[in-house]
Length: 44
Image (cartoon, rainbow, N blue to C red; front, side, top):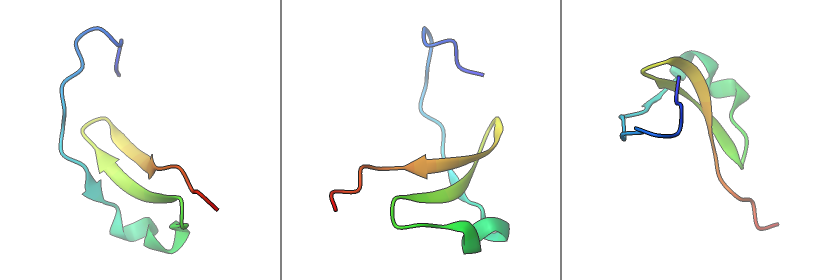
Protein backbone atom coordinates (compact mmCIF):
# COMPACT_ATOMS: atom_id res chain seq x y z
CA UNK A 1 0.00 0.00 0.00
CA UNK A 2 1.24 3.50 -0.78
CA UNK A 3 2.32 5.76 2.06
CA UNK A 4 2.75 8.73 -0.29
CA UNK A 5 6.46 9.19 0.43
CA UNK A 6 8.27 6.68 -1.80
CA UNK A 7 5.86 6.08 -4.67
CA UNK A 8 7.26 4.55 -7.84
CA UNK A 9 5.39 3.86 -11.08
CA UNK A 10 4.25 0.28 -11.65
CA UNK A 11 2.65 -1.26 -14.71
CA UNK A 12 -1.12 -1.76 -14.70
CA UNK A 13 -2.82 -4.65 -16.46
CA UNK A 14 -6.35 -4.64 -17.80
CA UNK A 15 -8.50 -6.89 -15.61
CA UNK A 16 -10.23 -8.81 -18.39
CA UNK A 17 -12.29 -10.81 -15.88
CA UNK A 18 -14.09 -7.56 -14.90
CA UNK A 19 -14.13 -5.82 -18.30
CA UNK A 20 -17.96 -5.84 -18.36
CA UNK A 21 -17.82 -3.45 -15.37
CA UNK A 22 -15.92 -0.84 -17.43
CA UNK A 23 -17.48 2.59 -17.79
CA UNK A 24 -16.64 5.65 -19.87
CA UNK A 25 -14.75 7.17 -16.92
CA UNK A 26 -12.97 4.12 -15.48
CA UNK A 27 -11.72 0.61 -16.30
CA UNK A 28 -10.82 -2.30 -14.03
CA UNK A 29 -7.09 -3.00 -13.72
CA UNK A 30 -4.70 -5.20 -11.79
CA UNK A 31 -1.94 -3.46 -9.82
CA UNK A 32 1.00 -4.99 -7.94
CA UNK A 33 -1.20 -4.60 -4.83
CA UNK A 34 -4.28 -6.26 -6.35
CA UNK A 35 -7.51 -5.27 -8.16
CA UNK A 36 -8.22 -1.56 -8.69
CA UNK A 37 -9.84 0.85 -11.13
CA UNK A 38 -8.16 3.38 -13.39
CA UNK A 39 -10.19 6.60 -13.35
CA UNK A 40 -10.04 9.76 -15.38
CA UNK A 41 -12.06 12.96 -15.50
CA UNK A 42 -15.16 12.70 -17.67
CA UNK A 43 -15.72 16.09 -19.28
CA UNK A 44 -19.41 15.50 -20.07
